[in-house]
Image (tube, rainbow, N blue to C red; front, side, top):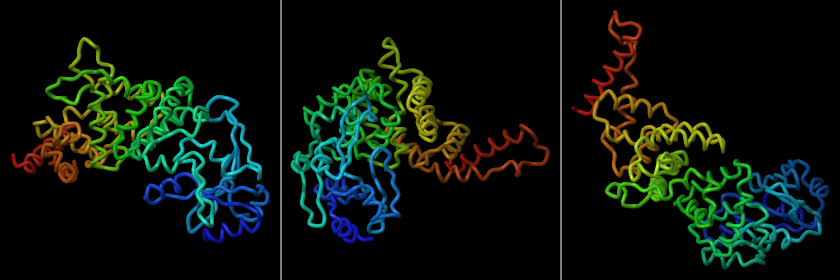
Length: 408
């Protein structure tokens, strides 16, 4: 079904149809929208289902249907109002009668850039809260004090600022700060959802800086907040403390790769420095070991994806030694370990380069060399070499082969 046919079908039965949210915002930003979301008003749920009997209902507390429009599966929601009556994002009473207007629907949204709609088919813009001007001024601004009703909107505002490279207004920062107490009790999967989206930004560091500006970093991502004030040797880290170094690394990784897994590893590589005793600073001896404990606590609190946890643990263990190895046997072991890790060589190298500034030749050529080393098999061992001797023979052969590759 085409969009035109969809709209005409609804309007013929007294309904109104609107494009809402991100697709309206992105059109004003001059960038293509990843998808389209629709809102309908002036029609009952039963009447809508009669018109589109094959459209599945996916909304639980209010009607949202999936309709095939222009070859894509699009969400079609009913205009609704929300009233806060409890805590968290589940504490809302929702009403969605045909009398609910588009202005009332837009009122419940988080920031002005997302509180705009275009009525179809003529494209009339509904912008009751000044979203168009905020997009033009490149700022994130809360629609109203209703922002406070869902505390995760504070993270959403920081994420929007990071994704679009916008500033956040002072009033909105104040609203974000007021979400602090309730945020501490929000389901961590909601926080993780905002983190995973923020890591796709061109400069992910902005997400964490805005949370810090609103005094929220320590209640949302304490592992990162703990890096603030952890001094480092100035000769090696002129950028500042461990937090500043981590922000620098994650932005460097983001400039090199879109791989979110690599970006998370850049974020996590030095989290062990957050628990360094004051008397040890500016040195952070053993932070590779401490970092594994911090990562385990983060995972226990937020349930990180398995690949994220495994990749970050690998980088935490290896990031200090990966550029300093000199013995071919240890280098071969590292290259083969990278090959088996959840990270690609490109991702591991992006984090390592961001952290150290350069790569040794064995990492530059690591992927090809690891493939070569992996071909060495115990099946090729000389007759009489058995049991544990086979593993030792393989390691010796791999070191010898790597020496050839490195032309030592």
